[in-house]
Image (tube, rainbow, N blue to C red; front, top):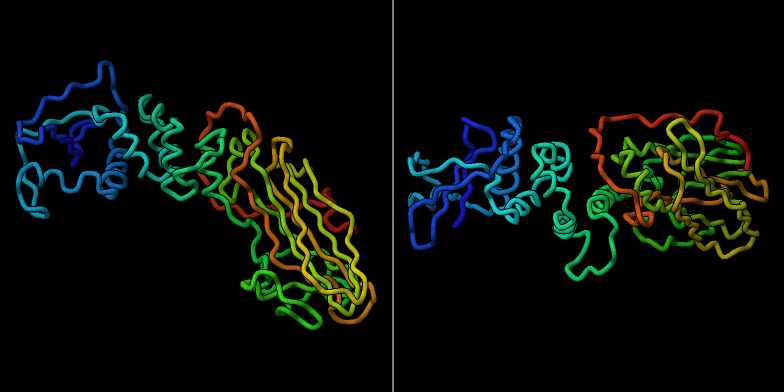
Length: 367
């Protein structure tokens, strides 16, 4: 039976380890890996690794108590028979199991640089597939091909709607008002006058436009949202954009949407800008979904500009233009085929405020 239960304060990467047979044979002397010399800095990493991974996961519950025969929970007693050995003497499958319970970013930023053995184990696809299974990103019977399990894990971890306040629950918060014509933007509750219920009952509100052009936008800073350059440029994950709009039954309207993938210096690299959709008066007021998926786009995407809006066609005072809600930008774990080899690691993230779009992108130009 193998037990790992304490760190040595006197040397790097050393742990107290007891190796004995199930019949109670005395501890066996452990041999160090020839030529292996872990870095001095790994002691702290090991302490975090063991406390976060091994002890919390329950792999070695109070192993010292089990070996010494004292009651679980009783104060520990020093033992002269205990041998101090390198953690790298553990079988690789045990190290992999420990790494499975270490937070992913800590694995890459703190543990991977410790030594070549840890680097090679942490780069194994097996480890990241286990972590995907552990987090529920895949199932036991998963049979879909994955180009890079490490990238897949992080893309699944980061997957969420990158637009804030998409369903008007916080009035106009988080939206940049680009055009506010007529009687301006307004928030109303579903279904609204001459309207219909939204397909998802969780959505309770919508934004509505007026008799002159109303446009609003958000500029998403991908690095501020946790994505780093290599993840975006090497793998170029699919970017899914969705929006929902509807007209009042008693008034026609025109709906507009524009989405740009933008570089760090605000050059447009890819766009989705379909022709405006015009709905006639006396329509069924049904909600319509518009969607687009960006794939195989050029490297260098760092921001996503999302803009939508419209106006009514009757020029009536009030709020008779298109109703809009449940907008979303999602970065999918689906990746460009045959990505380039991956070597870079996640960057340490600091809070960044999304940059304001320069006039060179013509944010306010009419559709």
